Image (cartoon, rainbow, N blue to C red; front, side, top):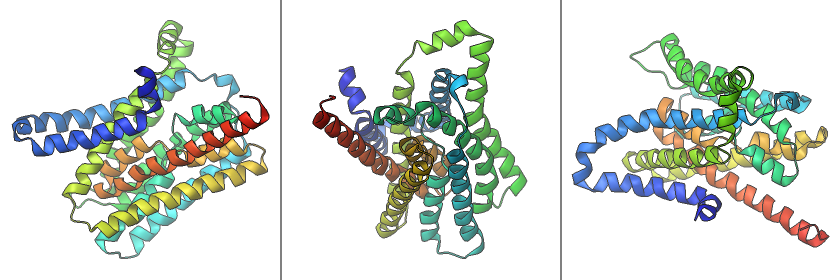
Length: 320
């Protein structure tokens, strides 16, 4: 049963999120529980992301984390591409229905690397330590850039930019970076706690699945309650596809120059979509969360193809 859940975590989590939304939306006897559920979801999602990052960072051997030139090029692409889209949204008037397309693409570009990317990278034959280094750097970049960019893109009439900046910084910065410092603290100050956390080998994976189910439910809620035309929603999903293809392509091209093609491709292309959906749903137009929601599908289709291709080559060469 556990093997089945691990092999099919992605579709099971997404299906659970979809069914969960429709159950709460259509069964009237659950109406009294909705305020509690909404409050619970608002708190549990960032907690799951935090716990997932903490367990992942506890497994890292910091002596193996060395910066590479391709890290700098990928970070530069992330911040420049997201900033360009933000500038378009800020300075060019757009129909409200189509702003979500650019917001979705922006979130997919600035979102940090998935914590699970190291696993896929290792299976494909890349450098897990190099990938982990970039994961940390991309989290730092997102923690700084998101509070600066999002309030400008989606300003709120009732609060100033500085207030919005502090609000988002207060939630995003600790969520992304505090697990990093806490993991270091446990490793060097409380080694028994660190050793205890290392015992939960696969827990981060299942926490990711639980968070994915919740944010999938939120994305479906945005779609069902939105007045945005279906054609715009398709364009948002297409924006997710284009950003996914572009980032995998550029990552691999840049990585080839520095002889680390697999790691760089996964670093730029495989995103922490749970975090991206949460950020889009919380700080931008909720409909824009469809973009990173579709990104889940696109990146996992590509990863599945990569793993299948590698397995096929191993069978041909007699290694498998």
